[in-house]
Image 1 (cartoon, rainbow, N blue to C red):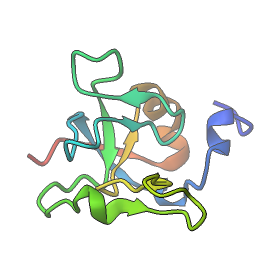
Image 2 (cartoon, rainbow, N blue to C red):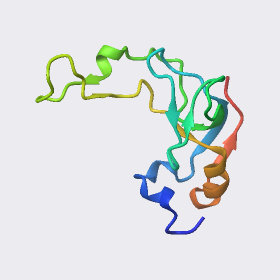
Image 3 (cartoon, helix red, strand yellow):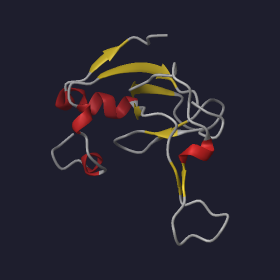
Image 4 (cartoon, rainbow, N blue to C red):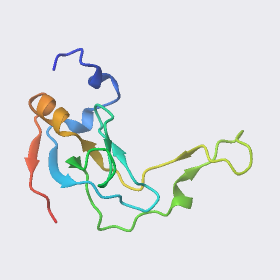
Length: 118
């Protein structure tokens, strides 16, 4: 990892400094949200048997609260034709990190790996 690593250009990483990341198997939080992406490299997480990562590190995992239904997470663009949705927000605030990015960036971001809480 270098300071000009392309993975650092994908977005804001302020939340990552000093984060405690749980090692977990990926499970979808709602039936309509079947995958996530690594917050750094964009690698896909899905449940087995799909060809994707099946476990990794997650920040902000909290499945104790009710998840908002799909209709509450859809945002219509004012100029979109009827029946088209422009975006759907995630049902959780989880941020997933793949094993490779965890190893490459744990010192830079001072991450701590913790056991799964449930």
